[in-house]
Length: 458
Image 1 (cartoon, rainbow, N blue to C red):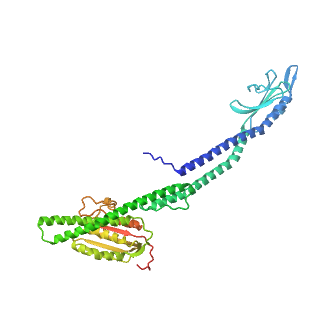
Image 2: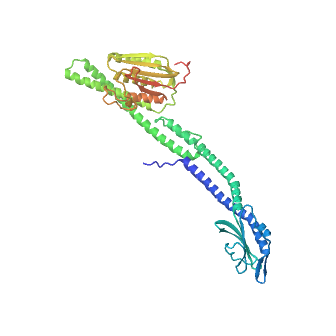
């Protein structure tokens, strides 16, 4: 499908530049017409003077016509340093009396009338001054157009060079003006592209042109409707997950009590499967609650707090150590102070999901290590494991909801890293997934924006 979108910048520039070029072309045509008229006015009189002198020196005696001018005087009349000058004298009956013979006859003229016209003589364009004297004699004097063309060229250059200069400056100013006029649109575009997909706050740009104010209002109305729909969906998800937690927890407790008693082997196996399924459902409900909390719109009523990642990870160590011990996994912590400005309710969800994800995919006898610290004043938290690792082609997909690598063992729901990604995005952080330094296993590293003063208490 062809892209039919049209650039406002291009449309404005094409209109302005084409308008300027059209005006310059019109000015050139008018200037050329004025230049030709001025050149003809300037030289036609000098061309008519020798025709008058020749006509005044023609006599008619006994029916014979004579040009009574010495040859030197005649040569002086038709001499020109630049152009070639010719003349012709015809009697009243059209016979050639003197001058060139191959010049066409004089146009019909009344006695005492003269005119100027353009013609060609021996393939040269010429300007002719023709007149008819009182005695009926017709005189034509013509010259080539070199002086006239030079004068026309000088007038065109004198008039059009400043015009072209002004046009070029106007085009440059139009280019800069259009670019400057579109800066607010570019700012709005950059602001939209820098937003998170779930940032549905209204667009507030006081510098936006009034011409796009209706568009901003319509777009903000759409954002309001999307925000309301998103809140309804999040409330439904949170309420559903919350309502499931209580019955699932009760069911899991009853199953655990039943499993403590003496049961036939087949009944115990069924109850164990039910208990495992109930535990997975409980975990899924908890993750859905965490996801709803992580992806919700930012709560501006609650300010972010200064939190030390080391304290969050240390709390997680006590919570996850029993499970790691039960799975024969060495859960280690290398914790250094790392102060961040964050939501204190979401950071524990991030750490818990990273550790839970690592424990689920690390085989017995493996290790999981949690690191916190600062790298060039950039706070970070990383979790390394000795599990099967994540292939390069799958690293961009594992942060999607409910996505699990095909053939992966374990009972994960595909929400752990999705929750981590949501929390990282909420804090404008960066999530990196790569292999451990040893070449096997997975290292997931989260970095947070720097800028918390080092002396601030956490």
